[in-house]
Length: 74
Image (cartoon, rainbow, N blue to C red; front, side, top):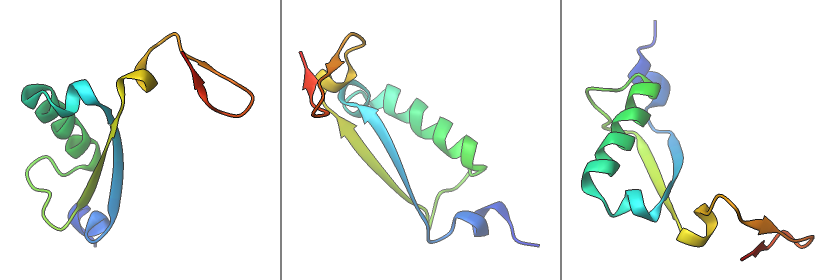
């Protein structure tokens, strides 16, 4: 039977985070631990490619609007 690690080994996971988290060490560690827990990999993430997409502040505003072209309108 394959282990949980074998299920994720060699695969990529993309995680989008706001820039406030990306540049706050303690916040980033909490998010990283949450991602690893959800993957069943709390103790080790070797051979797992986690790609962190850092989103700009304007994309994280709760009251933003999107126009018909799919662009964010401030």
